[in-house]
Amino acid sequence: MGWRVTLGSSTFSPFRIKRHAGGNGTLPTLTVEGGTPLKGEVRVSGAKNAVLKLMAASLLTKEPCVVRNVPRIGDVFNMIEVLEGLGARCSLDGDVLYIEARDLHPEAPLEPVREMRASVQVMGPLLGRLGEVKIAQPGGCAIGARPVDLHLAGLRALGATIEERHGFIHGRAAKLVGSEIHFDLPSVGATENIMMAAAVAEGETVIRNAAREPEIIEVQNFINCMGGRIRGAGTDTIRIVGVGGPLRGVDYTVIPDRIEAGTLAVCAAVSGGDLTLRPVIVEHMELVVAKLAEAGAAIEVRDETMRIWRKGKLKPLQIRSQPYPGFPTDMQPQILAMLTTAEGTSIVTETVYSSRFKHVDELRRMGADITVDGRVAVVRGPCELTGARVEASDLRAAAALVVAGLAAEGETVIEGLQHLDRGYEDLAGKLASVGARIVRRVPSEAIVP
Ligand code: UD1
Image (tube, rainbow, N blue to C red; front, side):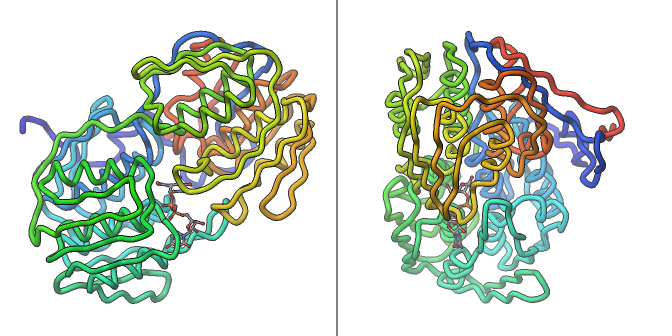
């Protein structure tokens, strides 16, 4: 394959915010002035939660892999650091990512692993390829405890010995052998980790109560293009016939990001605008689309294009986040923010994470009338939102504050943009291109050249 790989992660990031930069005024902020209906067309980027797993799966072969439609977001740059730390060579050219994992070692680099939970996805591929992995335990998370017990139980079922000591996970396997694995709950990451390890194991693996997210179908398709034999992704039973040896290189284009598309659709609805989103796979966002329609949005889908605009005032909703095909937890903060402007009381129940309501405190600072009791939030709309200085606690909370900012009277200043940047490719630029009054302010001292 005629491409050049570039060593050194600094090559990849268009901007690199100092990891430990701190203090007031040294980190970038986003200023949003509400009240403008968004109008026009926005391009939807590739799916973050698929790309990160395909990057991990690229470790299953010594041959070069090409992943296309890759979003230029913090999590991708971080995963590049993880792969490079393991010995792979990576290069991101526009939205095309080249990965060559000819020579690998089993110890994952500490800093990028601690930055991002999705780094645990390298466990399965490394055990499959090298028979060994050493990686830091993923830490706590702003949205609640996120253990990896199901990942480890699944890898043990395939024959790995796993020790957890001094904050590290150390896995070893002379060989991996297919097995029957029944998850207690349908974990996305655990399903993918086991699929990747089992793809190169000996014999057949069956995963029951598997997660059914579209990104899992992407992992199946990617590995099958590499010569793997997986079927059933998208259902709760996945069967993997291990090939017992290395896979081959692949050239693969990733699906559009259903959560980014959903976020933009919410922005259209909350602002009373008229947006056309492209490309989207509407089958991946059926419940989000249904809920937006129930709230009073008009939606028109043609091929890979979705147009969304608002008909009159927004109506309240009952939302319950659940594993796919339920309402995605990753859309809960954004829709909750939108519902503060609806005419009546909405009930939002979060069933996937134990404490995913941190955005509520910030929305209250903007005038929202929301009460939270355990996993249930009651939103009493319509609230007169007013701009305020607010801080994002995690990725989707940051998106929720953007949504609220678009609806609020006056200026909202959002801090904690490192969270937004993890998962959205230039959200501010995309919104500005359709009329939003949104400006990113980057103090010069926060940029590492
Ligand atoms: C993925 C997504 C994340 C999304 C989530 C649920 C990526 C990179 N991230 O995260 O954006 O919010 O799916 O749709 O794809 N759990 C355990 N033990 C485990 C694993 C998970 O108890 O070993 C629990 C978690 O704490 C959580 C729930 O299961 O409460 C769902 O987690 P999981 O489906 O594994 O999410 P992730 O793969 O981490």
